[in-house]
Length: 272
Image (tube, rainbow, N blue to C red):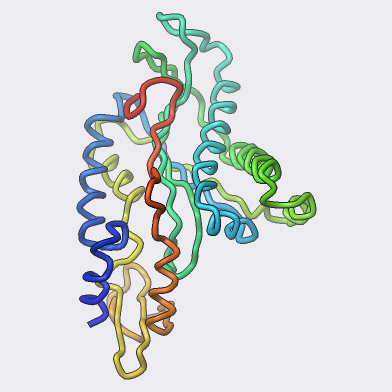
């Protein structure tokens, strides 16, 4: 019952409808693989931030774009440092990194607001003439530290956090930031590239994992890859009232004019 109500109620919010969203994810993945990614090796990156900073983005959605910008600026600096001999291409333009990014605000638990950046980045530097300059594998810890520095500096400049918050974050034993770095994927492995691209745009809720109990007006959301995906007794399942579940999903409603995916390099938009 809740599933049918959910589908009808969210049809007007295309980011909520799992069926519509999955179709767009498939088209997005096909577009990325066939029209955006060139014949260069690709790496996946997933970037997360501490809970202490997430409310800044929940109540000011324009800040979400800063996550992609700060991460791109971070890999740009590190990639260029890794290849000082790259110089310029045949057209005289400097080699630069290229990246496709998608900002998601949901996690395994759909009721928890968790902004994160999913990226596909060329595993090297690209020239404006299409030439490719490979680099050695960058250190994800160095990328994370530089990203943390850039993001905190941005939030301070926009007066979203105080110096005291920065001091608290730096006092933690664990940074609270993370950068996952995948293995390089060949440009010929179209199945793997489309799978990674689909993951960048997957819907926030899977209906097959959603169970509604009309007697208690509660929702159970089962964990991924569980045999009994609709069961109320699934290990690790989330249970809450139906209204709380829908209220949490409303936090994912995008602004009227927003871009959730960015094609980042210093040249043409929509392709590298």
